[in-house]
Each structure stands twice: as structure tokens, then as C-alpha cells.
Image 1: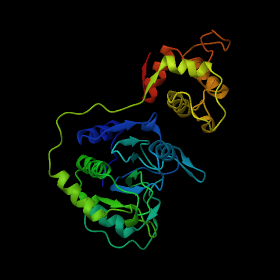
Image 2: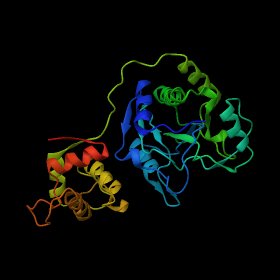
Image 3: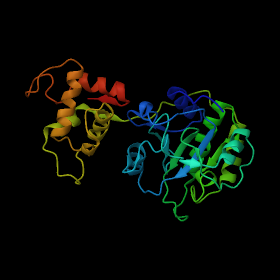
Image 4: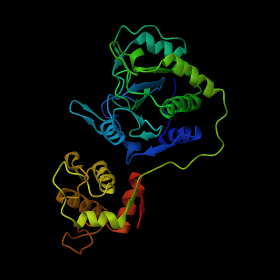
Length: 306
């Protein structure tokens, strides 16, 4: 039982376990705290996604889908072992679960069989979705299993918990199969071994998106392709995500194409910075400049290069 880790403390804990961490823009403030409590924290829950492709999986876990809004976890653990942070606070990942299992996690003893679903798990568990089809055939690469071990150990170490504070979704909610393809008992043994080791004294620099201003400006000046066609520059998606997080762009326009809705949203960002005017060449014309882009990146977690 503990107060949930602050965003920077969570990031530091993950980096201390020598994990590759990718910060999706806006993850520190993306949560479901407005619909329910977050904390006290009691443990870590591991899931599989039933998806293929890291970019698609991260976007889904960040935004959710009809009937289940995002974030759907705190982080996505990709096949290559990278940990993509998508939210901080209450997340839609655990649902209702067994109160006897919760008491066992709190007491750090082996959990009983889950046969009831009456306790809010979103309030009490950190959740990590692992990229896997969940069919028992899709492999679990060594790098991914190592990342699951280290993510779990990082949070346990930060709270002073042992490995019995880590459970799978299948141990929490009746009828859930995830994670399918490895044993949570074996994973807890790995986590216990990791906790017996000292953490690294040096913290690696977290990976984060970097947007090229010149490539972004070219994308903004070019008529965007039709919806569903490949994007011309992935950096547009990074900027659109930041504009969505700022409340300036509707999620349905987050498609990687710098169309009129994106230009208008960027103009709104410029106006927030004190620029005025919407005509071409005027300060708030919706065309990114270095100062406005750096300001957006500083607030929403991406870097800017020329």
C-alpha cells in the first residue's frame, strides 16, 4: 500500500533499471482521474494486448476505443523491450477483480484463485500492456520478457514491495487469459532475482520523439493525401498528438496528414503564445515556426531540430 509514484519518480525508477523508455507526448497528464480515484497503489498488473505492431499498439493504448477511453495502461512494453509511457494516474486496464486477490497482494502472499469481480483494480494497480497477439503462439522475445521483469522490479523497488506484488490480469479477473505464453510464477521468480541486485548508478537518457522543423513545414505546405494513405512525415503525428492533448485538435483528425484542421489547431496554439492573425505570413497563420514548435515540444515532451 503506497501513494502512487509521481511521474518523474516513475520515469527515474524505470531508467534506473536500464530500460529503454519512450515518452509519448502528454503522458504525464493523461489519465482517468476525473471518473475515479487513483491510489493507494498496491501492485503491478501485466497484460497482453491482442494486437500486432508497436505504433498501432501504442496509439490504441494511449487513446482507447469506442466504449473504453484511454489510457488503457501506464506503459506499453514492445517486442523489442522498449517501454512506451502513455499515461500517468488512473487508467482503464484492470476493471473489477477479486477482493481476496487484492488482500493477498497487499499482504504479499500467494494469491488465491480469482472467482469474484467486485473491487476496482484501476484504482490500485499500475498496468502494463505487452505487445502480443495473445494466442499462445505469438512469441515472447527475450528482450520483452526482460523488460517486463525490469519494469515490475523498478516499481516494486521504488515502493519497497516484493515480487508477490506483481500479478497477471488472469490472476485478478475471472475469465481473463492474459498474459498468455509465459508463467507469472516464473516471471515473479525473475523479478525477485532482479530485486536482489543493486540498481545502476547512472541513468540513461530517455528516448523521446524528435521533430524536424523543415520537414514539418514542408508537410504543412503540401496538400495532404487522402485519409488512409501513407503519411509524408511521421513528425506530423507527434505534433497532432500534442495538439490533441492541448484540446486544440479533435482526435478524429489525428491521422498524420497536416490538413486544414491541423493547420487551424496549430494556429490556435500560436494564438495561445500571444501571436495574432490567420492570413498567410502573419504570426498565427498555422505554419510552424521554431519558437512555437519548441514551446509545444517543451510542454508535450518532444524535441525539435532544424
